[in-house]
Amino acid sequence: MFTMRTSTTTRTSRIRRTTIAAALLTAALSMSACGITEVSKDPASAVPAGTAVTAPAPSTAPATPGAEATGTPGTPGGSSTGGSGTAAPSAPAAGSATADRQATGGTPTAHRPNGGRTAAAAVTTCTGANTRVVVQRPARPINHLLLTASNKSSAPCDLHAAPYLRFDQAHAPIAVDDSTRRQSVIRLAPGGSAYASVVLMGERTGGEVNGRTASRLAVHFASANGTGSTGPSAQLTLPSGTYLTDDARVMHWTDDFDEAAAY
Image (tube, rainbow, N blue to C red):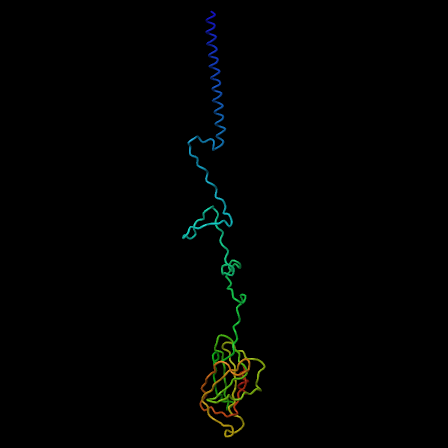
């Protein structure tokens, strides 16, 4: 009996130890399962060894203002390197048409040496180079010639004092009637005209004043400083039968046709 109880007791103890060991193993497995679940919350730790990891694509960062960019040599508009920023456009050079257009929002303003203003056309003295002269012999008054000077250039010119007139090969011009002197210079706009009347004979008879017939007339233009003529002269052919004496005289230029015609 003692021996049988001992065997039964021994077997019962082994069964209990086996049951306890199984319970401990089950608890250990449960704890291991809980540990894996907790680790899986960390994506990096949840990946088994040997499994490839693909990193999420980084979001495109906004371009950094003024970021330096290097284009591919020889390729227009080459893509930038060293970051996702785009190179800021360079500012237009000061004074350029682009700079003006960006500053004003409209058509670029042309720059000029005098501060951007259009310079007024330079005024020169009227001469045979820029002035056309026509000579006529009116029916009334008799023994007169009428000169018409017209600006044929694209810029204004000034007529000073009176014309200096040489008939044919005369050594000196005829007299000027200073009683007709004007107080101001006559400025001819392009296409504008002025007039001067010539008296061919005075009150003395032809025999006393060396009367003669002339065929050519040289019209010289007075200089601005009043020291003589300037520039090329105008060479004219006189109306047939033009006769003059040493008393011939010419009036100062005028812009009034009626004044010249009545002289």
